[in-house]
Image (cartoon, rainbow over all chains, first blue to last red; front, side):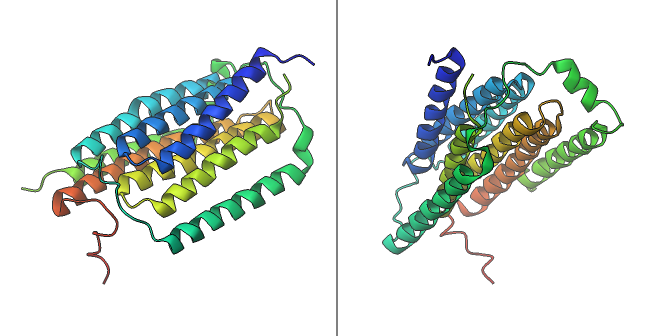
Length: 171
Length: 103
């Protein structure tokens, strides 16, 4: 049994995602949490790349790592809440949250493991060509996505205007 | 090339439940939003993985996670605008202090 390069990359990325997503919700500094979130998003982009969806990985890198995390960092600095995390959570609440999370994760993992696809291998190695993505985005036939594309563009415009309206200083 | 479907799903499950844990325990609004991002990201991974696994020739899951990323970006922008506005009015963004809408 030989281990291919793809497997090594996947397991390293998976370990990174697991560790950093745990640290992102347990660290005491908000700026560090945003940084760990950035690493988790990088790992997700790498997983898209391993799956062959390189366009999706590039979108993930540009939108999330380039846009959203920068937005987070700026708003953390604007609200001066980096060291604002020293509050106490009651033991009862912490216990109940931990219990529900662990039980939920256990149930989910049990369902995944006992489902039929436990030993199936993902077909890999073929990268999705970008022109296929472009053709599917710009057509109105079956399995083409022009309408959601336009709807998302209108949604983005609306939320841009909404965000400016909400965050603007009132005279 | 022996990566099983389950391994991807385990990664996204861990990410999802980390997000849920953070959503319940954090009190800073921005930290809650970071947890929500973790949850959305886990679902996007699942869409891509199941698309690749079940229908490798079609692109439904791929586009679902593409549009999910766009919607998540929109949601984050509006939520951060609201949070900054709350901070401007109340000088804090901890959930314990923002109780004006309690009725």
